Length: 173
Image: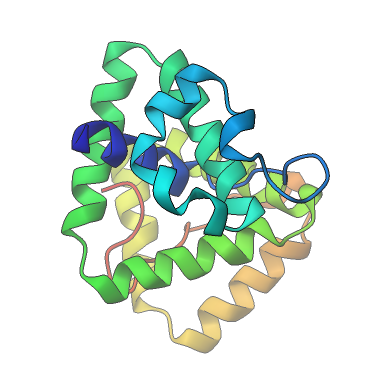
């Protein structure tokens, strides 16, 4: 059971952007189908106290979990282990960025997703080089670069370095 809970939470952390449920109240426990109730059983006692957005993210996470292959579930478990091993301050920073991302307009979210896909498609050596350049920049330089990319057209992403974690490690490691 703990393993399932950990995986559901990983899915939520990774796929955090979800619309709210219907009328804004979030699904009541009784409205969940049997499979969702089974997957979300650890949340039953506190379900009604969760925000509508959190209920919907949990429900959608449980649905995605059921649709995953065994390999995808294993990868999700691995991601959760890495998440669990992060220092609390770093997890808080990631949660904050995730919340900020969820509040961006859909078009801006899509731009960020596209840029991340582009970054992940780079060879490891090129990602490493970009991370090193990013880490050598001052906070002002980073802010300026991110502002430029935020407003730039899709074709001018050649040097986008991705986002740095507070620990100083870049993405893609």
